[in-house]
Image (cartoon, rainbow, N blue to C red; front, top):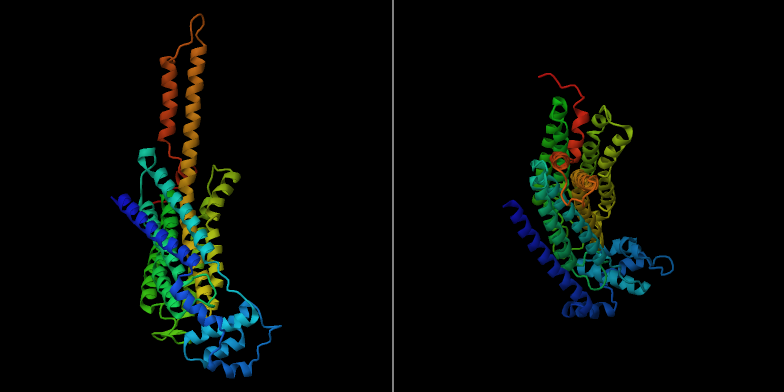
Length: 445
């Protein structure tokens, strides 16, 4: 029933996201005629509002030294316009005028960001399917546990995030706020960013919980370590719930601009929002390091395992640091959000890295189970090859008669025994560690 529900949600989210993507593509090609033609008529004249005159006198525009795409949004001249003008539209018009004077065109990487994130979404979905196949008892797996059901839930979350990213493209996410971008587009972008934030928080912390649950299945007899794992799960769950509720309450970033005001709303309910967002991201990175390094001492203390094998096991866990690297890069894109006049570009990058982080986190926590599936397939192939070789040797050993098409009874018994042993063995990553773990002293009590 849960698998059927996941499939329905996945198909629904995928179809809606593809529909929006097609509309976005058609809108880019046809120009979304009514709105864009109006904006192009407004921007073709390249008129700056009256409120910009005092700023242009204080900070004269030097075309030879101030004509870069970043200076359009971060120069002292633009910051002055942001303070002097009364509406966001006037600031956007000024930036369009600035770009026209410098003969600069708007950057637009939004479609590339969506395509890249959807490729990762496909990989994450395939990894989740592979995990379920590896764990399924229908394929001689050990059966499902709590971490598998959480992974299934995270797969649903990733569908919603992928769809939200496509919808943000309707607000020109990933494009500079020049020309065709208006306050309505920015409001639409912020709305979908606000919707996606809870999914991001749940997805990132859910992946960490999956890792810790894996550790608990690997070390069933170490009471102290299991208590530490339970405490870690509790802390991660509290962080996930509290940060999600907090994001919903502060209404960030949907209320970032007050109506058409060019002034960014930095405070809400007495809270300076950007430092809070930065702190939450820093806690997320710190928890990544803690969760991924948590089992390393236990892995290195295993007896009966070669150094090469220990290194391989640690490497699988080390792949999780790719997600941490993505989190660190995402941290860099939080800083410009503090007082941005280019929200479609800055929030587009911020949102894309958030979605990519969730997809990579899902892939990383599925790697151990996928390794088990690959090993089981290899073992099954070796067993099948052994059957073929035994059958061939049994047929060729009979002399003076035609080769027999069926091996002798003793051959069948031997080969079937090897197949049964191969099928009953659990080659999942965590159970490959079970044999070395048995050499550890079982704690008293």
